[in-house]
Image 1 (cartoon, helix red, strand yellow):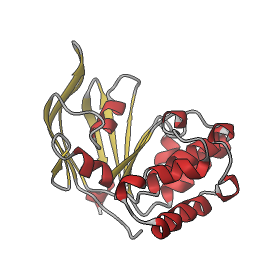
Image 2 (cartoon, helix red, strand yellow):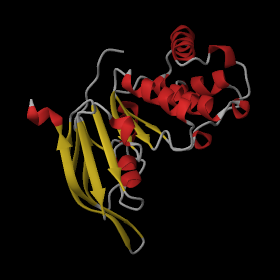
Image 3 (cartoon, one colour):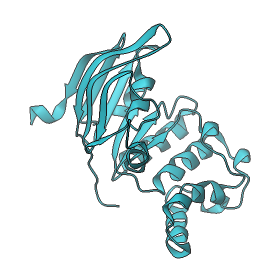
Image 4 (cartoon, helix red, strand yellow):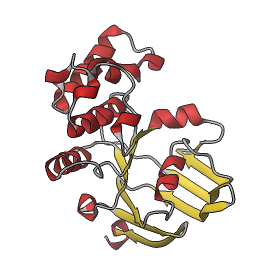
Length: 222
């Protein structure tokens, strides 16, 4: 896939759970290819991440992806913005590696040849070809995370949001996931506590108490 950029806009976004406010008055325009989101636990990072592809809808305000509103165009938004969860077991739904990767392609009605091409491509690219017929639940933690990533990337979204993708991994697998993110043609938004993962990122947002308290944009300095 060629280098892809998206424009994500958050306009006056507020969101809470019950009586607890989580995000309060977020106004952002995101166009960079590598964007990091950091902050303490409870700062609103994961909620912000889920807003970007419509997994969560704002209580107030709008989230737009290339002009598509997550409130009314959720399906189209999710085709453009993929999401990788912290725990891959949340995402893996089919018994074998190959079946799990192919599952996301079914609604796209691509045909057998294109489906096979895409599945074969991500299996090879992420070192999973030898596990094609293996039961997904028997993979190691690092392999499961790669499977979760591959199952998103096979759909060729323009942007991928990663929510704490290395938290459950050892050092070797954290480095592997970092390499995968670094090599993506797609835009990547990465929520993390691992600051090393954000080395070289164009923009880093810092959240505290549901607000953006720092916005480090390297593209403005060049």
